Length: 292
Image (tube, rainbow, N blue to C red; front, side, top):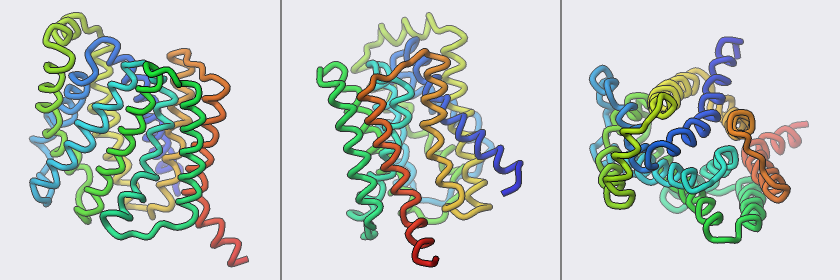
């Protein structure tokens, strides 16, 4: 891989990692569900006027928009708003890899290999260790919401798999039209019009930066570059770089937010990361060992 492309993939990883910090800054000013809706308004406009609609059924766009926008990011923003550490959230979200292959087994008939199963056992063991530190409901709830968010990320991956070969950038742009209205409606029902009005009237430059970073940098630039790189290189070359997202997330949260995780959370995080490593590199190492 040329240095330019390596720097591009690292830029995407860093952008997605630090985005968890921007989410924290955003939900501190604007209620989380409304903030999620604003993220998708920014992602859709004005890009939708310049990007051709992807050649997929309307139902596919709606399913993806609801799964990733309303469910995944709605839950993630709420979890962080309720106290889930941003750095830890960036790691827990990687459970989507295990939910993806489990859902692919159920809905697509794809086989599960031993490394995926072993990696899942190790990673969810890590989540159990983290949960031991969060047995009180008010601190356990954000963790459970984050795990549920990862599940819906996995579900959105199944929607993409069923869609076949598509222009991912245009798919992301057009599907971004789906989440805002449901999210705004949920926000008014759950968070209240008064809280939304107070957040919007008191929003600072940091809150606006959070909306812009989430909508443009993390969504459009991030997915655009990632899709371009996947079109140039095998998925086996690009996908492992996603393991660096929680590294970037935890480092940026420590530096910019002063987040410190406890001993149990550190051990649990190590187990989750180990499970992800087994899932990504296990088959490759076994094939290399057999070929030696």
